[in-house]
Amino acid sequence: MKFTKTLFVALAIILFVITGCSGIEDKGKNIEVEKRIGNENKYEEFREITDNKQVQKVKDILDEVDWKNAKVEMEHPADYNFWFRFKSDKMSAKVVLYKIWISPNKDKVEIVRGDNQYVKLNVEDSTDLFEILTGEKPSDL
Image (tube, rainbow, N blue to C red):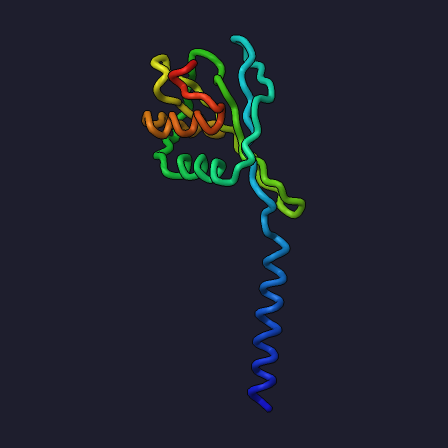
C-alpha cells in the first residue's frame, strides 16, 4: 500500500514537471536580415532565415568566436544588420543587433554585436555566415 502511494506521487510529480516544461517550449527561431540602401545609414528588409539548421549554424559560429570588448568606428555604416527573432507567445527575449561589414578584400566579415563587442571572422566562417544570411558569397559582391 505504501509502495503504491509512493509510486502514485512520483508519477504525479513527473507528470507535472513534463506538463509545466512543455508550456515554455520555443516555437522556433528565425533570423531577420536587413541590407543597407546606398551609402547612408538606411536599411531595408532583405531576408528572413527560417531553416532551423541554418539558424543553428549561425548561432554556432557566433558562439564559438572570441568576441573582443571594444567600441569600434568603421568608415561606413554596416553593410547588413541581423538579429534572432524568437517565435513564442510566452517568451519575450531581448533582441541583440548584429552589424556586419564586408572586408575590402571581400573574403572576411567583421561583426559588431550590441554596442561594444567586435570580432573579425576567419575566411571559412565568414563565407558560411555570409552565405546563410545573404544567399551569396562575399567574394561575389
